[in-house]
Image (cartoon, rainbow, N blue to C red; front, side, top):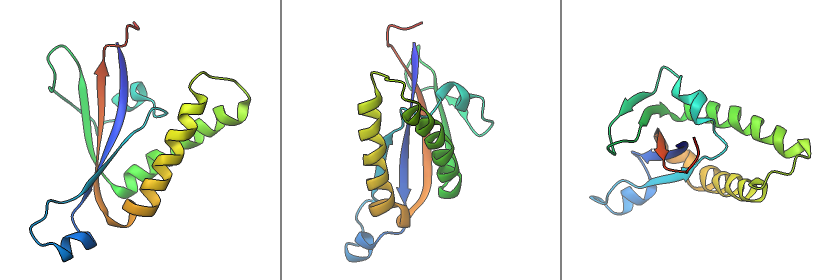
Length: 128
C-alpha cells in the first residue's frame, strides 16, 4: 500500500460569485506527490476518516497560511532532490506537477482561497 496527498482549495469569496449569485462556490484541487504522506500522518492536525473500506484516509482543514507553509517546506525538500543531480524516474513528472500547481495556485486561486482541505489517502500500489 502507498499513500498520496491532495489539496482542495475552498473559496468563500470570489469575483465569479459576485457576478453570478447562487452559483456554487468554486474549488480547486491539486495532487501533491512530493509531500511526504507518512510524515504528514504524524501531524496532530490530521484526523483519520473512513472513506473507503479497507483503506486509510486522513484529513486536515488548514488556513491558506498553514497550507502555504507546508507547501514551501515540501517544495524545499523537492528542490533539494531536483538540484542533487539524482535521476529519479519521476523527476520530469514532478517538475510538471510543481509548475502546474504554482501556475494554478498563484495566478488564479491564491487571492481567493479561504481554506484548504488536505487529504492523505491510501491506495493499492502493489508496494508494501
